[in-house]
Length: 438
Image (cartoon, rainbow, N blue to C red; front, side):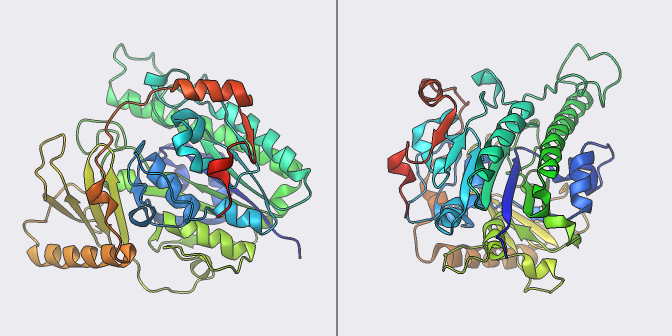
């Protein structure tokens, strides 16, 4: 039996509840909806660490950020070479591997672990923030992805590809006609009008969805959907002014930590919905089980295949953290969300401040019960502390050691030099020090 291919599609800054297949009021994602109908949709998937660098490191390793220690975005800690990434493991098992991503070239060679184990690492051009200039466009990601996959399939081996879309990351400026898809009137004079802003965020989702649709069409034309597992997820969501006066991705509320997770199997043979709590750390072990990889790899997640098959697993809670714009740790259970702030926040919440939400009755997390439901609060604090100790295995807690990295993104001159040097493509071995096998 031939091995399956794997296509991991990451859509940056995508809220699960703004996809129409997750029940959103607007039809933002018809092509992703189709994929969800043909596969398994996980209704309650959560990020373990936000934002970008912690999340994608977690997804690609199956290791919790407390243990891989990349707990801040643009921090000063590298991923240890002793922690293998999913593409490295699969490469050693006979897969060819490729990525369309810019986390290395954008942020500089310090973050070269994002290139580890890829036979081809392709940069789609641009960067995802207004301070840095040109934004990564979904059209470019799809074009590069088609070229990448075309090259991978010529090698006559099963492939693993990681494709990183940046829409709907800010600035929310979808191209025509998506800029008027959900706002039929003239654009307001102020681009800070929240209704308009959300319409443009949704337009970005629809734009990315259409470009992913073109990629799926290519896969179908090539006959690849018959032997490829397609996984769609995100690193985190977006606040959109729901908790505090900011649009972006700060905070451990569900609108930021709940992410889409959709898995389509070859020939759409397995379909359904899973409502259990699942986590970023579960994606890598799921891929390994599907790939038939038997090697012992120390991961914090579990394969989701049993859940997909309808079996019940032991109830699992989610430990989540952030340490970029503020420092906090949280616990998400079936019924409750506990958040503890470890330092004074920019808005003035004191160190040690607690928030407790009954998410089963208050899904928008509006009423803080931490200083009312004292027994629940104490119980969840003890449970969180226990989980943290279990994850750390006696190691130092990086969340307590590393400072927050609250700063604006810059387009490093080093990234420009590397783009000119490699022509936007790095092939295996060109970043030898970071790409060495573990």
